[in-house]
Image (cartoon, rainbow, N blue to C red; front, side):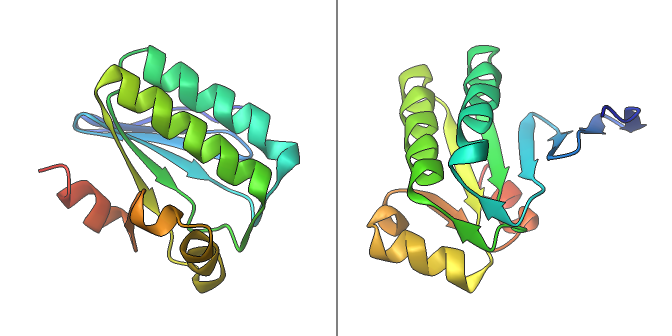
Length: 128
């Protein structure tokens, strides 16, 4: 279900049931709005982000703040997205405040590979 777009100054926000897309200045923020990020969501998520990257969004924040559980297929999608962004010369930042999700990034070795932040403000400031 598509909700109406709401404009706020030069920023905009529009949402879908499972995702919310927001642009602040030149940074695209894709928020995942489900608690379990699994193989069921991985392909659609990857397709959305690859489309975002290919349409010249070279500064992206992926907000996984509502995800309490992330499976290996979804982690794989995050790696594919990171590689696609690297090919285009852009940057991706990730919001991972949930301790359970953060632990997964540590044990898989992605903690040192991905740019992880606790909240949107920190991630946005890192682009400055």
